[in-house]
Each structure stands twice: as structure tokens, then as C-alpha cells.
Length: 309
Image (cartoon, rainbow, N blue to C red; front, side, top):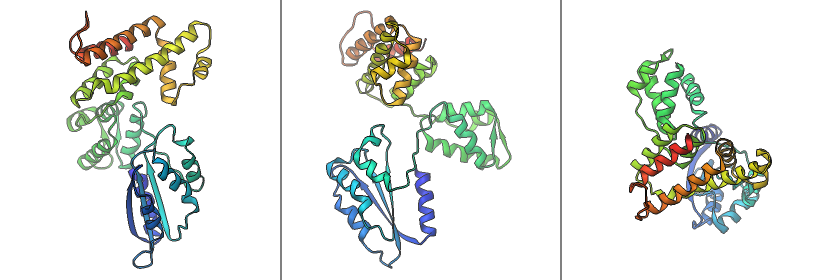
């Protein structure tokens, strides 16, 4: 997203935008500042760039009203760039529909673990480098969830070897640090993919960041409930696609995971996993649960391994 905005900014400057104003907006922000920025003449009468950065895809009532009226604003001599973090409900927002109907839209989707080797291959090629499959695997493993650091590692390889180098696994192992960052989505993806080792690694990463277990355990439980509902319909003779459509599971990533989990696991296994998740919730809040370890992270590792198996 940063690179896309930078490209737009460079083009605008080439076309005469000499002034730039950056606005950081939220639901409680004074939205009249957007009108002031877009209507205020440049000091030298030149074109200007106004960058509006939304802290949340939910701009509040006043923000939604103002953003919906942007297409009617006189933007003579102004290039307005609005950036916002993606949310699956964003496209259904009335203000977003009005705004995007009158704008060029650039979607910058997150790069998934499956897509990361291809991303690295293309990014290395941009700098005249190539890499063997094992090197791409190591790069992806060490930089997953942290594209800023991933880009820096590519630049480090370029500065070290120069153009024309075929990067080997040994080169990456020697020079690339483990800068991966994981969240609960990475954990769920690993579980659904049956990758128990990665699931445990994600948990170790979350523990190192001092993540609160109740803050993400609910998401795991919700995924298990969704998969259990799909599995129950499948057991009753409903096809998986029909079950997913009937249950209206969104967003698409969650829908896909629910389908995969329901295909891999029985209703009994999913029920057992939900019971273990409930026990982990109690342990994380200081309660003692019979036949469970007192360390909730150990039980989380057991849950992840059980589900991935």
C-alpha cells in the first residue's frame, strides 16, 4: 500500500503537484479539515496532493457522511489519495460505494503464506536476482507476516551480491534474520493445512509478543464452531458447498477454512477440540482444570497439534 501511494504521489508531482498535505482521520476527527485542505489554494497557486489516511474502516457517522460527499466536492487542482485498512464489510458501506464510484481503486491484498514464495521470486527479479526453491522457502518462512522486513531482506541480498546472482539456501540461512510476525489467522491457516509444526511456531511467536490468550482464543473457538456446523450438515447428507452457502460463513478466508476443517475432521473431533478450548480459557484465567497442564500455552500447543493431525 505504501508503494502504491508513493507511485501515485510521484505521478502527481510530475504533473505539477508541488504541495502535499497529510491528514490522519478517525471517527472522532474534525472532518471539516478535509474540506479546508481540498479547497485551500496552494501558497504559489500550484496543484496539491491531499493524503487522507483513515485509522479504521469505520470512520464514524460524520466521517461516513463526509466521505460519501467527497465526489461532489470541487477538487480543482487537487489530487486526493485516501488510504484505509481493508475490512471484508467495507464494500457494503454506503460511503465506500459512493466514494469508489467516482475514484480509481487500488486494492492491496495481504500476501498469504502460499503466495509469499512467488512474491519473493518477483521481488528478487525486480533487482536482477533469482533464487532456488529452498532459498524462497526459507525467505518465506522467516519473513511471513512482515512485508516491510521482507522487502528489506531482498534489498540486503541485492546490496550483498548484486545483479545476476542465483541466491542459494545457504546464502539466505546465513544472512536473513527471522523477522516473521504471526497472528491468529496464521495459526488457523496452519491448523487447517495440517501443519502442526508451524502451528506451534506461531504460538511461540504469539507468546513471545505477550499476546493475551483470551484475546485470540475466542477466534479459534468461533472457527471450530463454524466447522462443526458445516460438518453436522455434511453428516446429515448435505454437500459441503451447500452447507457453506446455507450457513452464510464470511469472510471468504473463514469460509474456506471452515470447509477444509469440516472435510478433514469428524464431528466428534471438533467437539473434543471445543471442550479443550473451553478448558484453556479457564486455565488462562487462573482456574485449575483436572487432567490439564497449569500452563495454558502448553495446552494450546496440544490443541493446535491435535487439530493439525
